Length: 119
Image (tube, rainbow, N blue to C red; front, side):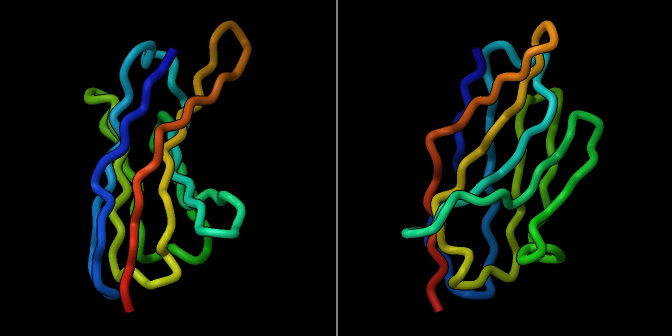
């Protein structure tokens, strides 16, 4: 099992920055990809950014150039640096980790952290 705990959300003015953290604990040795998703009220959850264990990253188009995902494998922690925040970035942000065990994939989710961007 893997437990994920997010932190770093909050209220910020448009144009501001926040840094989210996702700390993994438990059976972390087999974690492959870690990602950040978000869900705004009335909308489906969407992938924001993901990073593989080797450091390959991908982003949704709407955050490219503004958000940066990174991870510290020694600390089992992933980060999402969010700059130039916009009101449309307001959502609950969730961390997700994918773990492969004996050929089977498992996914784990954090509890979410609220990000609110005021105009």
